Length: 360
Ligand SMILES: NC(=O)c1ccc[n+]([C@@H]2O[C@H](COP(=O)([O-])OP(=O)(O)OC[C@H]3O[C@@H](n4cnc5c(N)ncnc54)[C@H](O)[C@@H]3O)[C@@H](O)[C@H]2O)c1
Image (cartoon, rainbow, N blue to C red):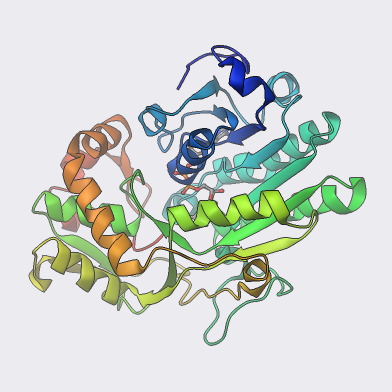
């Protein structure tokens, strides 16, 4: 990563003809995987990120991309940075449901106003291709079957409501102004570099420390798990071959209850069920999400990482990289459901004092 506020600084001559991609929110979990994959394939990548607690420059180590420290809500900055890009992909978001229950303001600001500010900047700069990255949570809970892209949005948490707001803004820019923006909606992601507050990285890092894992309610909530590499491949496909103005679902291959995921993590970490502490359920906790991804499959998408293999590799990555997650949690406080900021290094010492996050 080149930590420079310019979009051309330090770029090799070969990159001058490469596709120029702006990855907004590219220092976070999924955005950094996307930026690294694209730059490895020769794209000229610029990351713009505000570096909130979830943004981590270490996620971009080794990637040949430029970096702009900044806010997606900053109109003047976007007017400088956005022009000249062939593709803009928006990952920037407040992304954790429990934080949105404790404090929703930043979610509305970044996820709604930030999306509008970026869409306007893309329109002003006549960017030829834009992708807005979103989530299955905008539809709310579904007991049986799967949502298609035509399903009504019925978000049930401040996080999902703010993401739905961003989606609506992106769609409005496509319909009203003809902005060539597509929206992707994906299930629960897992993989390396995920800040340890969401279920899989929190449980793994707790177990690696010999600490208990907090499981919400009866643990029967069902999520569709998508490896981050598959999510990124799906977004790339949409950027390259998707229809502007359309929504595309990106599904995984593993619908599992939180109890089932917990069982696999305990086994991979060599721990028993005595390491699980059942904690009070999240307010308004959605029971199940499920997406029909036939539209993207018609473009050739197939999830390629089997869940059990991807999970084992993910656990190994956290075991091999304690410096990464210890530094990340030291730099940023973990947050309880009640909204109390605590230092993760100490708060997770006693799980009874920390409400874990059973999903995003
Ligand atoms: N994690 C999942 O399971 C999942 C699933 C489906 C969709 N998504 C969506 O994918 C996107 C990325 O998710 P993630 O898990 O990588 O999130 P993350 O929280 O790990 O990363 C978000 C990034 O956005 C940056 N950011 C936050 N506010 C900003 C602002 N105002 N200006 C500029 N940058 C800002 C942060 O610094 C961070 O780098 C989000 O839009 C999320 O809604 C996530």
